[in-house]
View (cartoon, rainbow, N blue to C red):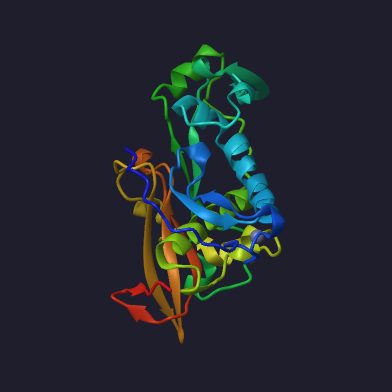
Length: 276
Ligand SMILES: [Zn+2]
């Protein structure tokens, strides 16, 4: 179920680099990716240079990681003519593996997401270079992945998936950052995600993770929304961090990602950072 999109006021500066956009101006940002059905839009929010950077990792996620899933579930695409009708998979036969392409109607598509440990920063660690994940979450989105696999001569619905965890983490970071700006205002927190989003530094496991240790058992029930996002505040020493819990594919019961969005600037009012 999609709710009517709220109207957010234009930001007027790039939410990533704070430039005014120069001669090219500022473009709107989809807060959840358009290619996953997102309809929340933040006007005047990205300069052309940053839009070019964010587009690239979003395309890795949307095409390589979620291409078959999006085609299977009928998510929108900006280039309908370019959407392939066949998607890769690995045919497994007597332990031999062979890469094949399968037409989408017969493709044993499964959605695969990782269940991460909580962000390093919230566990008192930093400088972690590798994502610690404690489980792989798999959803049989057509409800017939095993039969479909059999139909193409494979013993398993082994999707040839390319998982670029850092591209995925940057996409999650972009969602969390954009939603926080839309909700609280760009001046209400000191952002921690922008260098990661822009690819200038990689500290993703410090600031992005799951919601619980051994978090597979902490995945909440599925809900009637495509996406959910909840904000909360974490006190660490003298610093109050704004934290977002982001869930894509919430209606499929997918895992939740916890993201450290920024340091609260204006103090706390009613349990939320005050909007500027
Ligand atoms: Zn920018």
